[in-house]
Image (tube, rainbow, N blue to C red):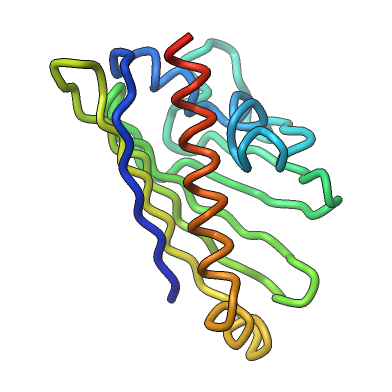
Length: 154
């Protein structure tokens, strides 16, 4: 299983950072703001809070036409949200992903820690992950977090 963990200081309160963690806000910053093309909730969303509840789910399409399905498995408002996803990636096979966003208030705003635990299903995917995908994922994560920070600190 692969793991990427990064933290960032954001000069915004946890409530503002939390707003950006809803699936439909991910295209603005996830993948550095260049990775996701569309997000559609596959669960009922009647109120804004429904986007953050356990069981909320969404189907996402990347700009490279790859598809992902995510479901929230843990949600503590303004503190922590965890979601589990599956993605089919050309050359890598199926990837199971567990993403956790943890928010901690600080004097200057929020410390956000992003944790990505992932598992490649194919042998080729596991080999490619060791060769270069892990490093690519870490760079993409840094880019995403910097984009989020820039949006929130405007």
